[in-house]
Length: 109
Image (cartoon, rainbow, N blue to C red; front, top):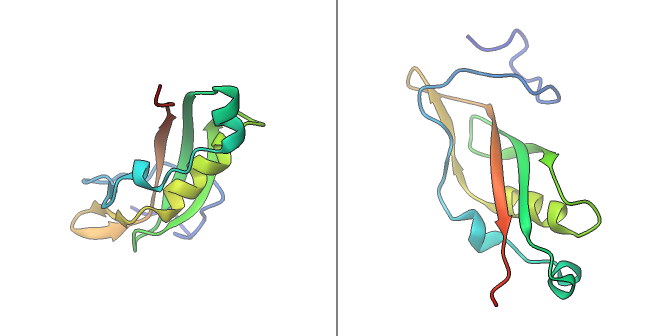
């Protein structure tokens, strides 16, 4: 069952689902590598906890594991928000859920 108010996206809670949200486009295509990170040769993975609502729209993002001061955190959130999503399914109906999404930044050498 959904939480009592159903719309509380400020608290990360687990909502059971039968099918996870699915990115309809690749997150990687929306990633813009920050120049400051490129110049410094910074690579790594940012993990973003995102709330994807019942329409497949990213409503909120929280950095779980980031790289502050490099621009990578902001670039990861922007890429996730630009990505089109298919909503999670619970008993054949769309539901909003929190999902941990890793975004990897790797320089081409």
